[in-house]
Length: 172
Image 1: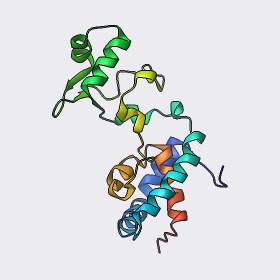
Image 2: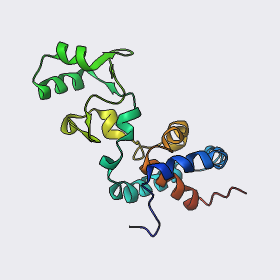
Image 3: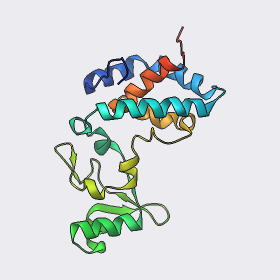
């Protein structure tokens, strides 16, 4: 593990997000102007690999309390099988029609969140599995989304703060 403090206090992270709005706007510009976005991806992936295992998401659950998750037809079928009920019943109870052939969870927080834990964890949707998307490439194209969750997701907050240091960002 790297030698830095990982912050997990949700109240601290929320306050920091407000206090650092101007700094984060400057950091967004800094990242968008970076000459090597692949290098930024490499750093983000490394930080994600260091930070994610150190954070217990079940002490937070903010993603399940705030995200609108897309659900594919295949995921609907898998969920129906896991819940041992017909797909039509599952769809009616938990989903609404989204764009194309996808559905979205019809409540926020998610129906399947209980005591900050996913009650369908083994059958959770791809959008849930992928969040906070720090393992994916093209990080500098997703900055709006990253900063949207900066004040609510301890993983994103900590990755972004360490990214500032690793990239040499200075907010003078």
